[in-house]
Image (cartoon, helix red, strand yellow):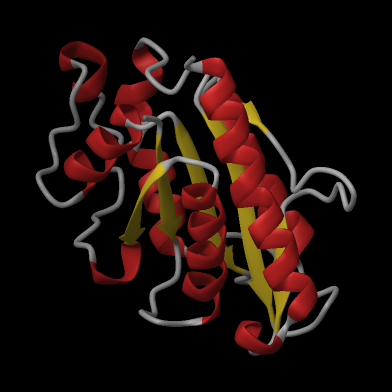
Amino acid sequence: MVKIIGIVGSPRNNGNTETLVTEALQSARAVGAETELVKLGSAEIEPCVACDICKATGECAIYDDVGGILEKMVDSQGLIIGSPVYFGNVTSQLKMLMDRSRPLRMDFKLNNKVGGAISTGGSRNGGQETTITAIHEFLLIQDAIIVGDGAPMAHYGGTGVGVTAEDEAGIQTSRNLGKRVAELAIKLNE
């Protein structure tokens, strides 16, 4: 059975981003994937200090929750990464995780994992696409396979606005994304 990890990049727990990532994971489960939710808001994450120890050892020299999160990412077949919009980009929590994932890139441990992005903002055009683009760029540099929310909508991923539990378009795009990530991960791992 394939495993899909949902990463909530918000500093808040039980917020709008978590709502949509949870919707995506429910859709992934509905097509046969095992899922797990990882909340960066309750994780201890320190910034990368550019010590380059990971280049020599293949592991980050900072001991916090990042090592365990990276391990979950490696052990999965799919990733759904969500972030609220912070000045047109991802949160600092998610950016620190991205920066600290350098050991995974040493031998491309996320190669051929299926990845998708979700973003939430205060208004419909509040920076969700630029935030999703940042997540896509992270996935590309890790050599993952990026999918959007698929037909019939075919957007960059899940995009929510305002109180996402009331945002039907945000819920639907996130559900479609979760289904798409899981379906492709299942096909690639048959």
